[in-house]
Amino acid sequence: MCERTTCDKCKKPTWVGCGQHIEEALDGVPKEDRCVCPGIFARIKAALGF
Image (cartoon, rainbow, N blue to C red; front, side, top):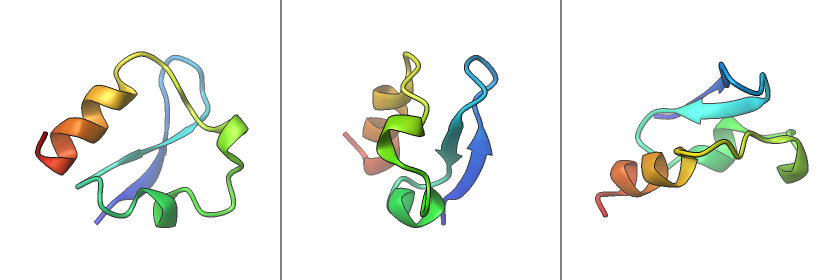
């Protein structure tokens, strides 16, 4: 299960966990207000097994 956390760099909401529940973890946070710091896509790919 994924849960919401705060990015250490930008202080915006992001997620931790398996990667299969990202939208649930970030429910209510507009996409433009979410963390997009480098590394987020690597975390998603790793969580999904890519």
